[in-house]
Amino acid sequence: MQANYELITFNALGDERGSLISIEEGYNAPFDIKRVYYIFDTKKDVIRGYHAHIKLQQIAIVIKGSCTFVLDDGKTRQEVELNNPNQGLLIKGLIWREMQDFSDDCVLVVLASEHYDESDYIRDYEKFIEYAKN
Ligand code: T46
Image (cartoon, rainbow, N blue to C red; front, side, top):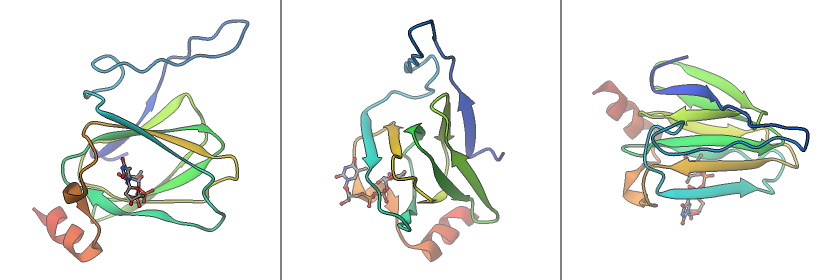
């Protein structure tokens, strides 16, 4: 896995009643969490994303179902399937992302290091490639 993203495994605090995962900034989240959003009811064959972020860091967790992230650093593309609430995909650098193959029941939760800011998005792939060269 490359430096701009990595899979994190969370410690599951399970007991006979079931499982519980806790995410705390400075402990198992490497940034201050300023925003949480979640994506669900994504229609079949929809591909979301098609952008990179300049500054934003995020942890994506599929707490139910599955989906696949296509991650592109400007040189190589890699697919990462998320299907386990014990795992989070930390995206910490300049990465073009596309999300696809959402299961009907997929719930994708994202923890973000910044408030929503459209000016942090690079939504043009050619522009992303220019950024990725620097
Ligand atoms: C990302 C991937 C994994 C807001 O108003 N506030 C928010 O916090 C977010 C995330 C979105 N929006 C608005 C912007 C658009 O009008 O909601 C609409 C849908 O957002 P977007 O088309 O950017 O959604 P995705 O699924 O393509 O991308 C999202 C995040 O935007 C992005 O940061 O990394 O999920």
